[in-house]
Each structure stands twice: as structure tokens, then as C-alpha cells.
Amino acid sequence: MQNYLFVYGTLRRSARHPMHKLLATGSCFIGRAHYQGRLYQIAHYPGVVASLNPADLVVGELYQLLQPDLMLAELDHYEACSAAFAKPQEYRRELQQVKLENGDNITCWVYLYNLNVDGMACILSGDFLNQGIE
Image 1 (cartoon, one colour):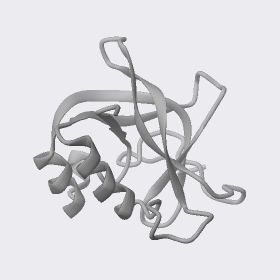
Image 2: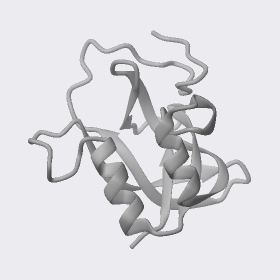
Image 3: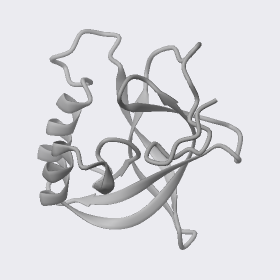
Image 4: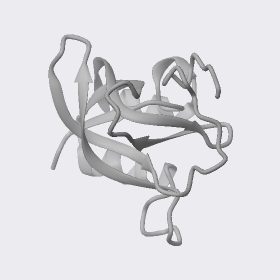
């Protein structure tokens, strides 16, 4: 199982969300990273969708999970994409490529927004914690 996870919203360190504490205790912070996607304001949290445009970059953090099976089960429940939630689920967890600040590409888990984004505000900066909304 892949043991890297990219987070871009409420799970980031400076978001100060209680779920980050769970992530912090069960993983090692690798560094800042970027994902080629578009970031949307869903509610009090963001959602990302993949983009073919290389200019669309989402800011986030990469973590190495110490016990991936256990941590991903917890995070799937938090992201409402476990089997306990009715379909269509708001998010889906997929393996994607992210780029670290040193230029290295890493394959990791990313929670992608799984519903329609028509009419939702796009976070132009690609950074949920430093927004410019379109």
C-alpha cells in the first residue's frame, strides 16, 4: 500500500484543525508540495479536482504515513468516503502525482472532490490558507 498522503485543506499544519493532530501523530511531515488541480471552496473546507492545465497548482503538504491502513481508514471516515457513507460520496481517495519543492515527483494519496463544482468559487491562489476567490 502507498504510504504517502498529500493534504491541501483542513489537515494542513497551520489550519489548526483537530484532525491534523491525528495525522501528525501517525505520520512524518515530508514537506510542502504542489498538485496539478483546481481548488474550490466547498463550505468551510476546500475540494480539489484534477486539471490538465500545468498553471493550476494546489498548495499542500506531503506526509509519510507510519501505519497507512489504520490512518487511511480514519481519514476516509473524516473525508466521508468510507463504505459507511452513501454514494455518491463527496470525496474519493486516489493515487496521484505531486511535486515537492525540490522538484521530486511523488506518487501519493489525494482526496479529490467527487461532486459537481459548477457554480462553486475557485480559490485562485491554489492555497486554501491564503485565498483569492474567483
